[in-house]
Image (cartoon, rainbow, N blue to C red; front, side, top):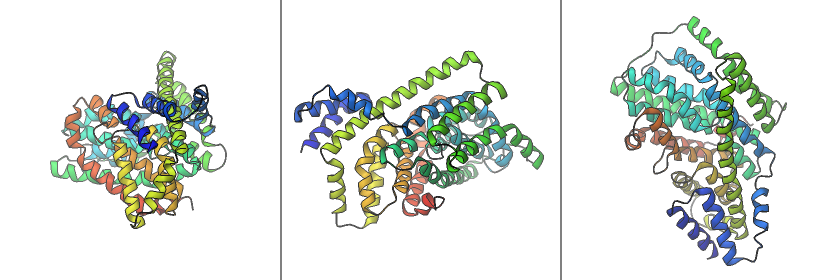
Length: 423
């Protein structure tokens, strides 16, 4: 009964449009004030304890690395390379957009940065080539979700910290699902292009053009090899890899491509600090909220309730997916990970699931929430970049939503996609 009071307070705060981070902390404080004899002086200590994690230090550095990649001229070279590979296909620029988003996802680790960086380059070009503006914008919003699935990924780092599992293992596990999602989006783009008559927009390529564009983009393409290869080879930890990514992105953007001027570094650093502070504030209050949930045995009770249902494990897994999809539609990804991991992970473990496999299921589900109303953060970003309205994007995004949900089901029931490379 007490847990109902906790969630009741939280829902009321959400209805009142209180920011998520403040709502989580305030709900926890009010609940404890009414039900427990805990000195308030201990609350700040618990907030800081939620941030006392070495793996968590990777998050702000990957955020800064993503900002450097976004401003460092890397996105243009990735787009040119993608054009040389798939530009001559039916709906060529649509495929270029998806491939470019996948490349950039392997550098930025952020869906928002991926949508903004690639969309600002290619949406105007697609509209000029005859593509419908809403289709082009929805395509970039959907493809941007690969930013939190393909490693390195900030949400994968946060899940690893919350679940106590290997971040390196999660990075490996995200490779094949991320590639599969990108390829499935290309199938949708091909079908829509064929129906709408979006033809081959670019001149035919040849090996010389591919090699030339590859050389121009080589420094950008080498970065994920250095970062992920160093992690998997045991050269450095994911946290150390995030620092390497910052140094590499700074050197390439400032001294090699010369796209970042020193006067722009202040804007990049300030933007990174603001993003990091918001992320860490959510993590601290969500961690505090998670502590209250654990104290009230909510994870244990939920796990016990679901496991006692007289249904097959398949139905239980479908229920978990529905919960994640529903939460992802209205709650910020980071807060969802911190709150739901201690609740749903015990259920997944009771089904015999690998915690790394479950982490990929969770991240892919929550990535869909980025393009699902009523919140749909990537839709808002896409609407701004693509110079269209949110309402028009909601209709255009439906085919991509359908294929992403199919991907979630495949990833859920074919665990080898997530764990195969680990073995």
